[in-house]
Length: 272
Image (cartoon, rainbow, N blue to C red; front, top):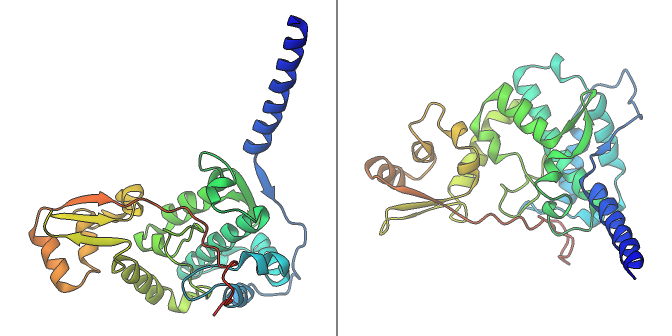
């Protein structure tokens, strides 16, 4: 009897180990389909994909994209072998913003159907354990965001254009970013996010400001050139709210973060 219990226990342990290793192993999306050497890099394909699969609220039709990935895969092939080091500052930042957003979508499509990126790997594994070939190297999403975008460009407004495929993220714009209009788009995205009461709202009766957890996770980024997060917010709030923040000692309270997938696929009206 004891021998049988031991055998069953060992079998269960083996199964659990296999499941654990499968769940936590690093997944890499490497590419060998190198684009034509004389083809110039462009975000045009990604722009078309976003227009076809993302609605005005930033929700993605993952079902449709998974069924028809040809343009998207062609763009990912371009990303894999591009050389952003040859580009100007704005072009490089544009490259990495578009790359991050595209690879988040790719990570979701690879595991779809899911209800949240947190269902892909535990302990933030979607961002730290999925790897993608980009600019001739293999990166995780965390490496792109923290090791490249936040380190090399140090612009807090990028947090409002980098989209983590979740409901509490900034909405995904249904166009690819372009270097020529990047400054305008960064300002617009920041303004729209901060003036959205679902992300930032003031309770004067309690002298509190309820804000997205983005302002907690990246607090140091928002304090560069500002006294604190409230000082940063004041730059984008309506004048009466900005004046209130500048004249009142307020406490920040962080809103719950909704990790539900930004999925449009179940909406019968389609992308508009």
